[in-house]
Image (cartoon, rainbow, N blue to C red; front, top):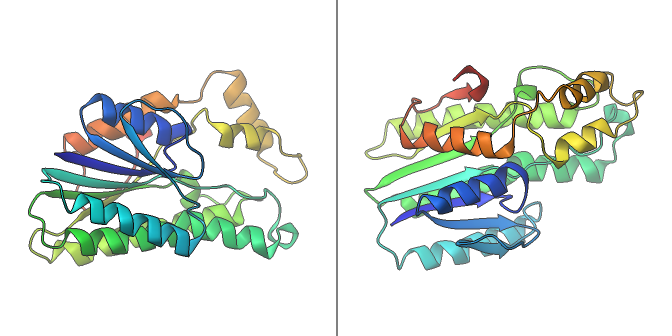
Length: 241
């Protein structure tokens, strides 16, 4: 049985990924705060920014997977948040913590648990972290998002280096999905110009129909993983495929 676990699988890229993998006969599990009706996807309600809740729910899921015979298992750390768009001095400490927890701490903890769970498995094992081009470019107003995604990239490379030396270690890669037509983009376009100097660029992308669809991104990510196109530790922008 082929298993894929997706965080934030109830909307945007995560939902499209859940639907794509389910259509390819994977057993799909989605961990997200909201529950929606997606055919052939097991949905687990969890606040991924709450460390204890996330840890407990993921632990229970892994206990269930112990009962299955696995051909492959993949963790896609997709959930993320932009948080308040403003200069750092105008963002509340609570909002900063929530963004870092969801964008970075969550993927770190889930990867820790996933790797421990799969140590004795001889099947294909992979972690795919959904990062962002913002990891490499400073956008004023996005300091927390940019920093947390940059850290996620380095986490990906380091975990890959650790696993590379092990017998049948877990493959770990990060992908930049490009600018995708999701609720995050709607949030960006609703920002005040004084809080985000690059606002017009994102307004223009929408008006010119230059945004990727979530479905296209999901299809591309699925094919990258299926065809094993990237080496362990790769950080890759799908716009370059």
